[in-house]
Image 1: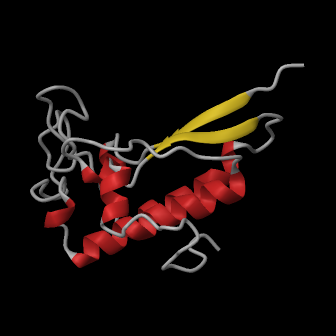
Image 2: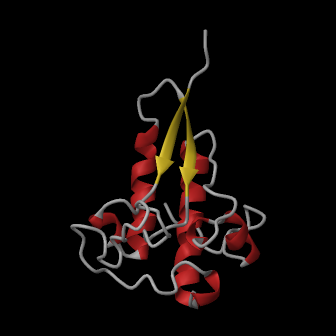
Length: 156
């Protein structure tokens, strides 16, 4: 018998509807969807890619010289907010940092209770801190240790 793992990728930035979600809606969506990842499956499920991103403002995320849905520069999208200041933690205000931390914690809570593991994408980026584990850790936004949660039972 061969062991098989289902690799789920959790991103909430690749449609106009997803980038328009409020931070609490991003948290709720991951809480609501995670139980379905392995529902009825006889396979282990690992979230093989996920991020803290609630925008698609990262350079070249949607393709080289292609805009973002968040700022309305992607073809067929509408303006949600400005991408100015979204790619560097040094530009984030306390509310944005808290929203990102809550989203990370909701994902950790959900993935740890409904899957057999997770892998954050990516360790380091050049200019997209919503996707940069080291930058998030250094700024105290990604819980360290992982059990050091600021929010309680987000998905209950």
